Amino acid sequence: MLLAAKKIVVEQLPEENRHLVEVETNVAFSVGSPSENKWTFTIELAPSVSNCFEVVFGVDKNSDEVLGLEEGRFCVGWDCGEWFWRDRYTGEVCNLAGATGLRKLDWVMLLNGDKTVRSVSCDVFDGNSPKSFFDSNVDLMRIVSRSADNVRVESKILLTGFSLFVR
Image (cartoon, rainbow, N blue to C red; front, side, top):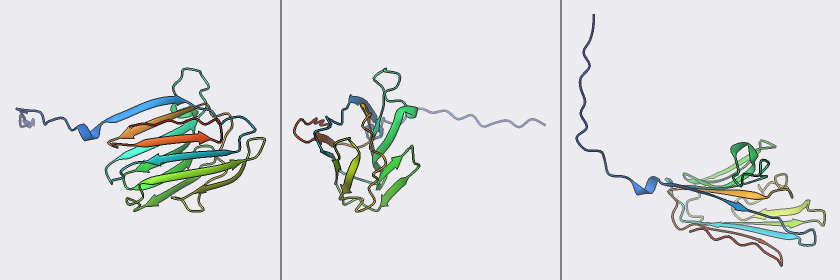
């Protein structure tokens, strides 16, 4: 017995939704020289339950200037209503749900002379900042924005800093 399917005709496609746009870029990155001992990292955005923004730090092992999924070490950002960080090597994850009022994440690390981490503080995660993720070999960061407008990312190493502004 054969059943006939009803024919569906789409007269007009819906208008494109510009709010569902994904933008990605890769930026060369350095953690500075051993004499520098303070690294600050800031993300500032207008968080909502419908946008996503993440920064992935890693090592460009194949030198193609693109941080592939397998090359990413640590990810921090905002995803649909919560700030988060993930460490791919240790499997550690931290999510801070219901934080739509927190527009800015400030991360500060004090480093020892051999570039090991002495202390980490982050206003958003309040004591749940990982020390294990820092890797002095990091040379690339991938920034991905999904429907997040007016985002600013800044990274500075004490004295001879590196700053990146993304809008």
